[in-house]
Length: 140
Image (cartoon, rainbow, N blue to C red; front, side, top):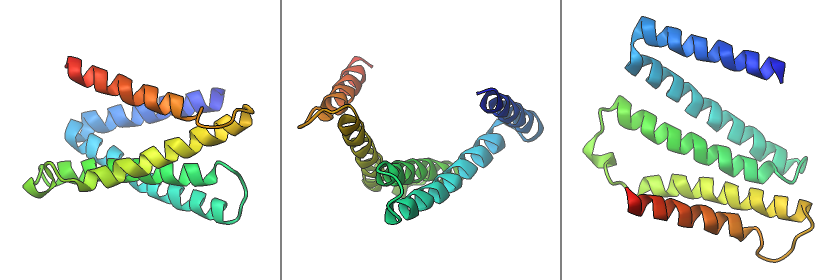
């Protein structure tokens, strides 16, 4: 835990340093782009781990990281290209969000089995999160 916290502080310092040295926009774009690219590499690694049948969470992790990389990559490119019209309101983003949703569903399914639960119990947190998000959207 200490190493992870130390690493977190180093990365925060690096991003704040990039902000001061290069400006907020450049620091944001470099950080976001690097994270999107790392996410794609992590997704590929988990896909390989799933193929090798090393862990039941591997497929969920592959979908989650592919979704994360795709969504981050979308917003990274969107900002790099100065919000091009073709990307504004594009349904392609929904395909990327769907990858993320599948990853979440697979995770909750594995967690359900780990807890000895059966049926569609794993859908309760998914439905709850979706309903809460919809309620917050309606409020704002």
